[in-house]
Image (cartoon, rainbow, N blue to C red):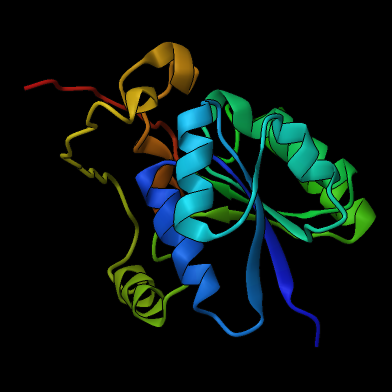
Length: 198
């Protein structure tokens, strides 16, 4: 079996960690990367051992890449995922998949037509313990109201979590929680996100 060759868009701390994990899995290799700044591209190459390119489109077009991992600010997810799929690559996109339903539908349609995988990473969603928790909660009956709260420090390197011009005006954690609620209980009458700053 041939190795799965990953190209990675984005080079923050989180994605560098993921690149290291890929490198530790038999049959996986990180072959190419991209980030917006020369300094982060240099860091990516130093920490992963893979070269980095100046333009993200080069990762999507490369014959050395089978799967493109997208870990960039939210506003870029749709454009980059669509380019990768059109180039014949499988795609793994960090939450949120994109900013609008019609964009997500288009990505799913392209993937289906070309027999490619578009994977939307949502926390521990595919872990066996998560499946058991979902099954237990379903036994409680009809859900009338659900609320989830998350507290975290965005930090100076994660501006897109607090700069709405980079997140598309959305709340970064709402997609995580909403996906779980929809999986549990189906359609929702209303979903609301609140931003509380300490």
